[in-house]
Image (cartoon, rainbow, N blue to C red; front, side, top):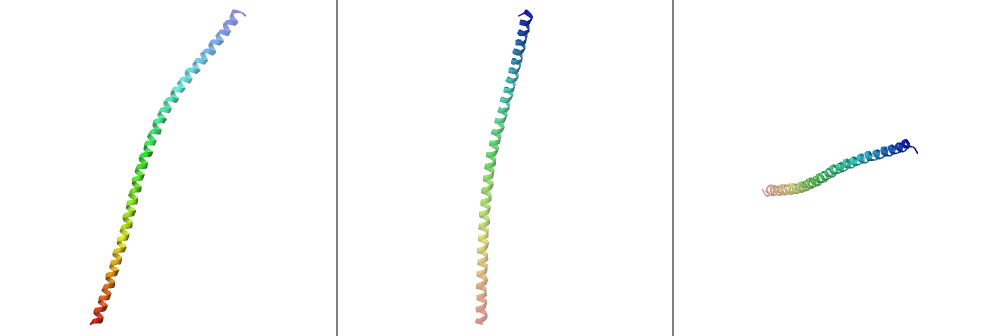
Amino acid sequence: MTFEEVQEILNGMLRIQQDIQVKQLNNTDAIARIDEQQKINSEAIALLTENISNLNVVSQRHEDRLTALYGYQQSADSDRLNIMQGVLDIKRKLAEIEKQLGTGS
């Protein structure tokens, strides 16, 4: 093997080593970007989890209010029926009294 052939082989090996080093640097950069993106994603997930928790609390409050309003509506309906029944009883008694007064005269 001549000196030029050996030098050509060594130059080829150096180029391969340089390519490997460049690829390793690129991989290191890519890993750093992936790590940074993972941190950003973790923070976003934490924020979304907190928002979901807050929405669940608000939803429960709305459900509680609706339940209370439904209870108030039921109570109001019951009161209205009781009043209507009382008015009917009064009208019935009034009719009886009028009937007694009309026949008693």
